[in-house]
Every structure is written in C-alpha cells, then in structure tokens.
Length: 87
Image (cartoon, rainbow, N blue to C red; front, top):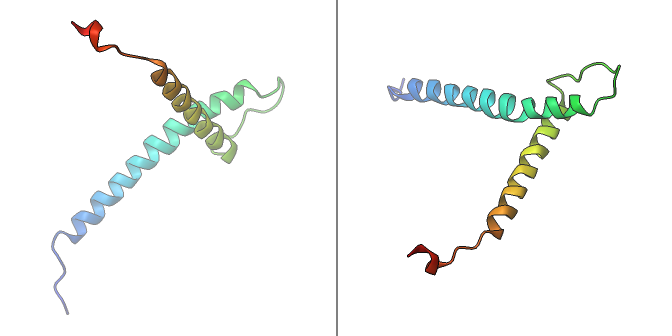
C-alpha cells in the first residue's frame, strides 16, 4: 500500500470549492440573471414567466455579455490619445 501525498485531500477540497464558486458566480449570477431579465422583458404579456434554469436564459445571458464586450471593444478602439496633450 502506497502512502498518498498528505495534501492530496486538501487539493481536492480546494478544487471543489473553486468549481462551486465558479458555478455560482459565473453561471448562475453573471449569465442567468441578465438572461432571465432580458427573456422576461421580451416575453408576451400573459405568458408564464421564463424558467430561470433554462438553456435559453443562459444563452441570452451569454449573448448579453458578448454584446457588452463587443460594444466596449468598439468604444475603446475609437479613443485616440495624443502624447502632446499630456504635457
């Protein structure tokens, strides 16, 4: 019987905590919250509310963040700095 690395269990615990944090923060909050509100905004009146755990909500949230990044990239690419104006 081989002796395992004593920190092996610690690394597993830290990995699980990191993955739980990643899942909660990125997937649930950053993707599903804006996705849910955008899907709900465009849902017809009288229709049931969208399921917060649906694929559509996550996809719309991902598209929302891609659009935010694209707009940010475009705005930052239009800013020009002149070294002469720094003095």
